[in-house]
Image (cartoon, rainbow, N blue to C red; front, side, top):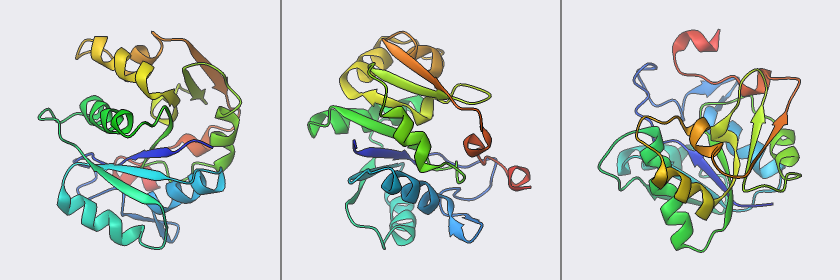
Length: 187
C-alpha cells in the first residue's frame, strides 16, 4: 500500500473547534481515519497541519501510532487547495511518488474504500458515493501537483483532478463518506 496523507490543516470555523480531535463514537475523528488507513495497509501516515499548535494537539491523539509524521503548511495562502499543494510538494521532495489522500473529518470511512482504490491504474483514482470524493483520491504526486499548479484559483479540486488521467470507482454505500463540518453533522 502507498503512504497516506491525512488533511487536517483546516481552521474548523463552522465547528468552532479543531475537528480532527473531536470525539466521535469514542475516538477522535483523526484516529478513526488513521486506523482505516492502517487497516488498508498504509505504513507511513503523513498529517498536513496548519501550525505547530495544531500539530501538538493532533500528536497527542495519534501518539499510540508509529510511523506518523507531520507536514506544516508553508503556503501564505490559507485554503484547502493551497494546503494540499504545500503537502504534495513536501511529498515530492521526499521522493514519494504516489499517495492516498484522506480528510480528517470523515470518521466513518472504511478501510475497504482505500483497498478498492488500489485496484485502479490511472494517475488519479477517485471514489464516488452519492458525490465524487476528491479528497479521498489515490494520486500520483507529480501529476496532481502539476494539475494544481495549472489550475485557476477558482477551479474546484474535483475539476482539477479530472483534467488528468483519472478513474472513478463507484461505491454503493456512501454513508462512510459522510464528513463532519458542523455540530449538526454529528446528529
